Image (cartoon, rainbow, N blue to C red; front, side):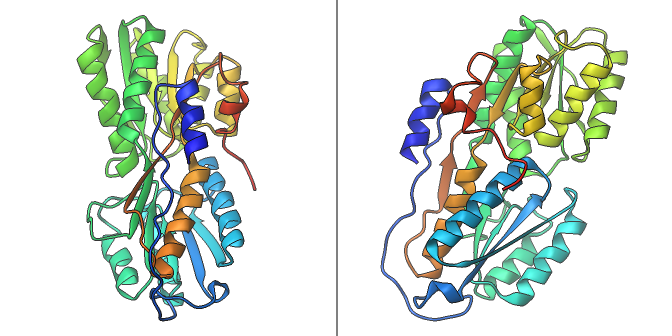
Length: 332
C-alpha cells in the first residue's frame, strides 16, 4: 500500500510497490468456483510454511482480520517443520473440503505442484503467498517480497560491517525454496560483484532448525578463524546463528545480517548480536492474499503479481515508529 511504501523509502533503500487488487465485473456461480452471491458462505483458507514461525503468524493474523472485514469464513493451518511430507497431507485435507479460496506458502518449488494444481482444477482460487512454485499456471496471484533485492541489501550491509575483509557464509533452510534461493542469489551475486575482499564460503543448510544453525556456525568458526560475517536468511536460521555466535564468545566480532524481524531477532539486534535485519511485510502479504482470493471468487480481475515492502532495520532506526510497525508478532 502507498503509505507503507513511502515509509519504507524513508528508512531504507528498498521499497517494493504493494499494489491494490484490481477491479472488474462479477460473475455468477457457487462453491469453489468464481461467482457472486453472499461471501458469508465462502471459505478462504491459509496454509503456511511453518505455523510457529513469527513471519507466518504475522501473516495469518492479518489474513484473518481481512477475511473478517470482507465477510468470508477463514481457516488456517501449517506444518510444524519446513517439510514437503508434512505440508502435503494438509493440502490434501484442505482439498477435500473444496474451499472457495486458498492462500498457500509451498515449501518446495516443484514437489507440491501436482497437489496444488489438482485443488485448483477443482475450482479453488489459489493465491501463492511468500513462496511460489515454478509452474506459472499455478495461482491466480503471487504475492511476495523482492527477495533477490533483499539478499543484495543484506550483502552490502554485511560487507560494510566486516570492513570488506574476511570470510562470510550463508546459512539457509534447504535448496528448492523460491524465497531463500532468491535471497542467496542476490547476496552471493552482490558479494562477488562489489565486495571482492570478502571470501564466500560454501552455502550450508539447516533444514529450518535453529539448533542445527547454531552447530553450523560453531563448526565454521573452528574451521575458519577469519570468519567475519554470516548471512542468515530466515527467522529460525537467524535465531540459531545468533545463539551460535554468542555461545562461541564472538558477539560483535562476527557480524550478522539476517532476513526477517521476529521477536527474538529484534532482541538480538537490540543487544548487539545482530547488526542488520531485512524485514519483510508479512501482514500486507496476508491482507493482499485475502483481497486477491476474494476478488477471484467474485469473478473480478486479479493482480497476477504483487511485491511488498522490505525494510533494512539497524540499531539506529529500530525505535522509529515507521520501522517498528514491521516487527513480527509472536501471536495474534
